[in-house]
Image (cartoon, helix red, strand yellow):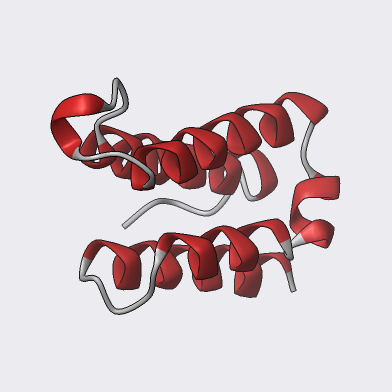
Length: 95
């Protein structure tokens, strides 16, 4: 189940990057994965929520007027997913 939720989030991030879904939908998908978030140490949820809020904030302004770069946020969300996967499944080698 947790692996499926991680895959769902990776797919949602990819869809967001390809502009197949919007930021509101992406954040809703992310926040709905409560089983995954509750399976990780609390700091993971804190960091994830901070990134989501920054992403939502960045969508309210043009790229030039916002201090949050969406591409950097995408990269940070990807790193978050990698770290969460490693924390939950430390014995599974990363491809």
